[in-house]
Amino acid sequence: MNLKKVYPSYMLILPLAIFLVFFVLPSTVGYLYAFTDWNQYTTDLNFVGIQNFVEVFENRSLSLAFVNTMIFAAVKTIGVTILGFVFALALNRKLKTTNILRTIYFIPAIFSALVVGLIFSALFDYHTGVVNQALIAVGLENWTQQWLGLRIPALVTINLAEIWRNLGYAMVITLAGLQSISSDYMEAAMVDGATGWVRFKSIILPLIMPSVNVNILYSLIYGLKMFDLVYVLTQGGPGHDTETFGTLIMNEMAKGRYGQSVAINFVFTILLVIAAIAYQKFSSRWEEVD
Image (cartoon, rainbow, N blue to C red; front, side):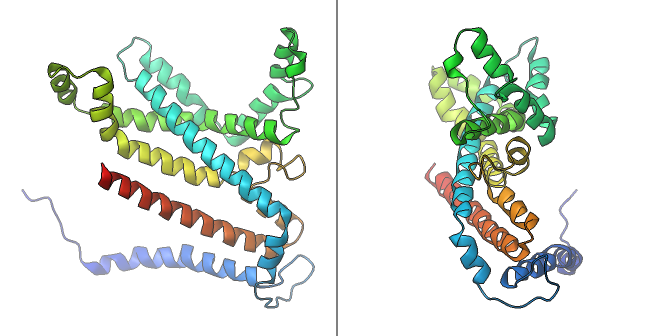
């Protein structure tokens, strides 16, 4: 019985129309506001060309937001991918507590950014936080920090919270890839006398690369879109030290600078597209080399 079906091309018209009307058109119209003087003080819109973009690029907060966004994206992608891989390997073994451990490690993934933010605020608060109190209790008062009040400690804290929150997803995706590997490959390699490292390098790693690629792309895109956790923990502060594109867009909108806010969003969208295309080209070349 042939299960393959060839659908006529006209069946694509409806989904394409829906996509154009509800996504492409609103996005395109929305980005046009970046070229106007739209703000909270006037209802008349005037075309101002690239003036908003000039003001945005002259704003020091944009460079900080760019640097911080790159830091969050890089640290999250590397941390989540590697730790998800390690945890998946550890939990791919047949243990009595495997299912319980998988559940425990996945629990943070179901928490909202607000819940995770409250947890890490309680842990890293300067006066009452568990971390500083524990350091004081063991005689390490000099190690106490204003974890959310200084740039570097705040970046570290936010990255820890984001990795902890997303580790479960990476672990599950990698674990699914590991469990899809046929045991015949491993048994044949063991019969041939292959060591554990050789089996890992020559069999396991190549076969789970699609899962690893999904983790990297997912972490990269959502790392670039960091907003909710940053807003809950620091609101982009202290000052603009932990500002990201997301918080910068919101802060500009809150000041009534709607045109500049849309201009920042336009620049951010281009950055996301470039990052996605660059990674796809990089991963495809990697697969060709392999």
